[in-house]
Amino acid sequence: GNHIFNSSASSTYKAWNKLFYISYGDGSNANGTFANDTVTIAGISVQQQSFAIVATAHNFNGDQADGLMGLGYQNIAAGQENPVIWSMYLAGELTQPIFSFWFGPISTGSDTGELILGGYDTTKYTGAFTYSPVKLKGYWEFAMDSVSLSFSSATITTIATSVSAILDTGTTMIVVPTTYANAINTLVGGAYDTTNNQSAM
View 1 (tube, rainbow, N blue to C red):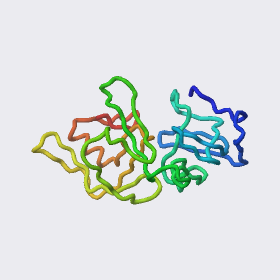
View 2 (cartoon, rainbow, N blue to C red):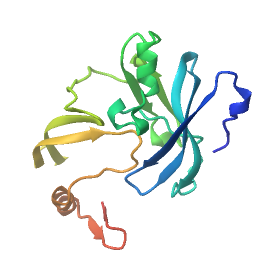
View 3 (cartoon, one colour):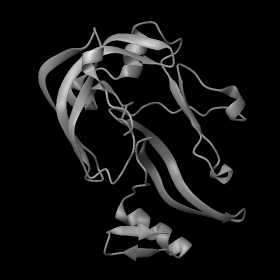
View 4 (tube, helix red, strand yellow):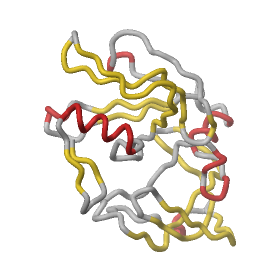
């Protein structure tokens, strides 16, 4: 990344004698140590928020991010620490225990987007929300009635029914079981790349 955290510049920083390690589905991983400090995002501050100081990171393939902020539940957090969004809500800093994302159209040619803490931007959508209860509190997992593909208003093909799904803004790909991937590939004329163990659609 372009910015390095300087713990010596903070009077509220406290290092822990606790090791940190995390790995991701794409094979990347990082390790270091835990610490806490006052964390401020867009003017919202949380005191003694736990986080990790990364010593080494592997297989991030040139990613220039300064760090990662997990938004899953506490029980899947490395070290079982409270995620910062939940700490903000418990501290009374958010009006609602929600967060939302808006991604700008790729047609604009620029990387634009928003993370809204404690609410949502009514200028960024039309219609009404559809709510689904969290099925398992870890990732944001919910039940889907069905998954279908439509190439015209007259042709709708159902791929799966009564399945679980996870919404994860940190995942750059859509991951599905092989059976469903094969069905989708057949419909769209995709091919399976055996060298990378991935489907190309």
